[in-house]
Length: 61
Image (cartoon, rainbow, N blue to C red; front, top):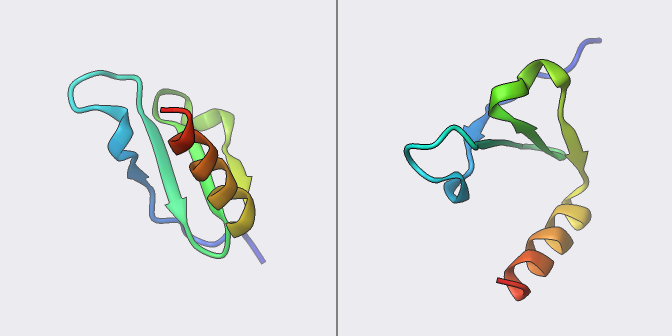
């Protein structure tokens, strides 16, 4: 069976007018990819890993 269809959306932290964008797809896992280099694939995180990453980033901003 192939990879499930993902619903990608631009991260709200990517800004509006620049091309430095990150796209996110949430589901059983959270996938992250570079908008300008989609062909290079994506990183995938479990729910716990993603929550930990987001919490860490929030605490350092």
